Image 1: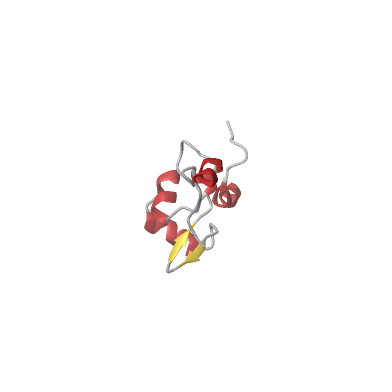
Image 2: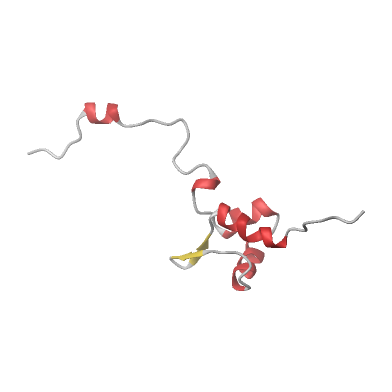
Amino acid sequence: MSNAVSSSALADAPTTSKPLFEDPQSRLLSSAELGQFIGKSGRTIERMVKAKKIPAYFINGSYRFSLGDVRRALERFKIKEVAL
């Protein structure tokens, strides 16, 4: 019995022009990557996690972030009205 994958099975596999999880909305970001999106350092991002300002996952000793979750969490700091 062979465990090899047939060429027809590979032909049926979906192909994409982009690598999987290239879109930051669909993957977990590191502290440094999230910092690039919001203009802060990775260390500042980690301080924000410890202050419970943004949600994070702690995986294998490092923080990971969902960009959508962070955006929703930061909405509470948005200034609603601007006085003229």
